[in-house]
Image (cartoon, rainbow, N blue to C red; front, side):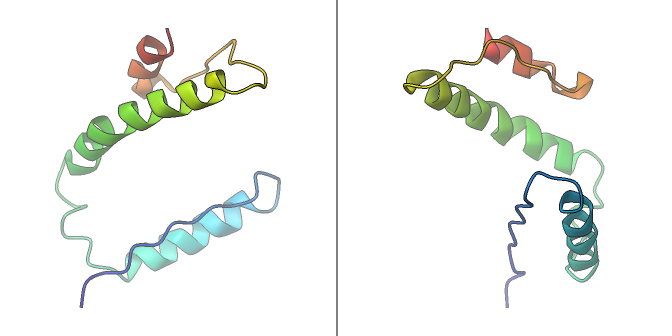
Length: 86
């Protein structure tokens, strides 16, 4: 049987993010983490998928009738986000 694929989405408020993060870690301990243990595999997957999704998100927000994004704050390891946001 294939490993389950769980998407966890906490309500973005105090008291919601940390408990669901802890639950996610507990769930991850019970799955086969052989691939995740390989150095660079996770980072490579993030670099491959996230930029395209980030660009789609910006286009969706800025293409709507609401407020457009005027500032992007990115973690230092996600420098590509600033290039895409231009």
